[in-house]
Amino acid sequence: MQIIQNQNIKNYNTFGIDVKAKGFVRITSENDLYEVLVRELSPLKIMGGGSNILPTDDIDAYVLRNEIKGIEIVDEDDDRVLVNVGAGEKWHNFVLWAISQGLGGIENLSLIPGSVGAAPMQNIGAYGVEQESTFHSLSAIHLESGVRKSFFKYECKFGYRESIFKNELKDQYFITNVCYLLKKNHHVLNIEYGAIKDVLKQKSITSPSILDVSEAIIEIRQSKLPDPRKIGNAGSFFKNPVISPTQYNNLLASFPEAPSFPQADGSIKIPAGWLIERIGYKGKTYETYGVHKEQALVLVNYGGSKGRDIYNLSLEIKGAVFKRFYIDIQHEVNIW
Ligand code: FAD
Ligand code: NAP
Image (cartoon, rainbow, N blue to C red; front, side):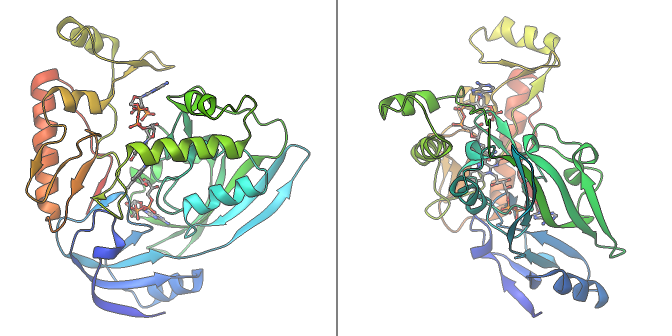
């Protein structure tokens, strides 16, 4: 295990923010992690693919980059397969592996950047599916005590882009591996969301496979989202707000055209992108950074911008949305 002092992490965060970390350690095994704990390196920050963080300054901590690999089938029955995945595997590689094995359940989560270990953090979701629908359990090591603990689904408090690891247990556990239950038989595809059906129709696919759905989603995502290798970004900067029926009625009184998605518990989800577009921030550019011209939810670094500037822009947008709609939008990206 090597500790690199003053490591520049520009190439390790998809925003491409040029900052240094006091120390940088690649964690390729649990032994590496135990060595960090025995040496009492402190403070520690955990990083996967760096696709959901915004560093605002040099990092006065040892950054532990999770590179624990491995994908292994550990159990199966007639319909399902239990797969144990090293938390440092790339999420999309895991999706491709599942598809190659004919295993269904995560095809709608194709092309989400980042690591498997970060997927439970914010319960990643896209195209009508969240990782919790196939999540079984995970193993994690408590950074203070070094004690290993398994977390089953009911303990993770998964919610809309939420989990216990983003809240009560924030920065306390290093997730080392995650188990998913995938379907080998009787898998039901979810193609109702957005343009999936249209893309399948354009390709004259009437009886889609999991590969067809994955490829359709990859095509849609590539046509809509900025590629972080070309324009620095961390995906949606804000979560979609979920509001009460009373708040919704107030919104409708002034903005009857507001798009909305009713939730099972009676609350209503409003696309944050629409709110931001309505206050005129979509495509707004400030020399090196701004709001993407096609995706109002995505803040971008065109090259050379400071994390602090992007963070301040996010606060300005948050304030302006509140002023116009009385709706408080929350950051989805982790501010470092
Ligand atoms: P990082 O950015 O490295 O870390 C994120 C947080 O998780 C940090 O707080 C970190 O400390 C913590 N963390 C990371 N690994 C561990 C670990 N092993 N143990 C404990 N804590 C850990 N998200 C979606 O939900 N749906 C999408 O469709 C989606 N699309 C995106 C598209 C683009 C172009 C981009 C850039 C991002 C997108 N995201 C999306 C956001 C992002 O890809 C996910 O949140 C992803 O899970 C982050 O993974 P990561 O490994 O890069 O995490
Ligand atoms: P979109 O399909 O244009 O939809 C805009 C918003 O409306 C989305 O935020 C979505 O909420 C909501 N929505 C649309 N159809 C819905 C439905 N049938 N039921 C419930 N909610 C619906 O969004 P997009 O920006 O192109 O993204 C497509 C998918 O990829 C979305 O699921 C989005 O969350 C995901 N994505 C996430 C990130 C990220 O960083 N988190 C980045 C890019 C894309 P939901 O977000 O809840 O789905």
